[in-house]
Amino acid sequence: MNGFPLHPGKHALPAVPDPAEHAAYVRTTDPEADLAPFDGAVLLYQGRLLEHALRTYRTSARPGWVRGGLHLVEDRGRRFALCGGFGLGAPAAGLVVEQLAALGARRVITVGTAASLQHNLGPGALVVGATALRDEGLSHHYLAPGRTASPSPALTQHLTEALASYDLPVTRGPIWTTDAPYRETTAEVTRYGAEGILAADMEAAAVFAVGHCRTVAVATVLAIADSLVDRRPRQHSPDTEHALHTALAAAAQALRTSTASPPPSANTRVELLVNRSRRAPL
Image (cartoon, rainbow, N blue to C red):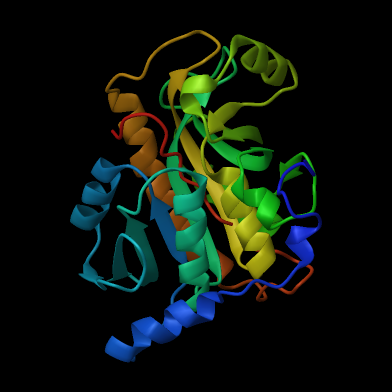
């Protein structure tokens, strides 16, 4: 065995399929399919959060543009895309980021939930991902071997500043992305918690990797919904739901603010606000 991926040096090899093929296919039925004029896109993993977003903003649906549901927001000076209903985990999120990028999106923020690895992070706390441990599979097909993946520094800063205007606890730091939420072990929780890892999710490392590969700005914000260090299974929490609503509002604000910044270059990779889709949706 050669390790993972099985083919050595895969991240540096050209792929046979091209995401541009997806965009071309969409435009055969909708020639106006183009996200370039918009501030960016917000990915939402929780179904109830998408329902809240559709009640909050004036939107128009764009079926077939990406996997799941895509809604264009043009409301109160904001122009961005909302995307949800595409599934959970790294492969689902990575695929959607690829399709959004192919349609012209240059900034992506994902909003979701996470499990705490720290005693002081309870339901309703918000975590902004600074790096993500690559304990999933997808990032290894996009990046050279390594332990972590990182979001766009600029978009993450815009997101952090937007969240600061709300009266909620926000912590910026590293997270742990894993494909196996029912195989999170005591040994891992103890080790990563001691290293200062804040929370566990299922998508962040993957969307950071795709953003890096496609030169799309990616950032992530996660609402704590349960705890692995003080084992507390997920329950419906008004605090977590309020935190998700706040994260969505801040993500829209951050996308708008970031449009005033210079467009990303090949050396300044963009950020995706990564959504946490673990466990049962809120």
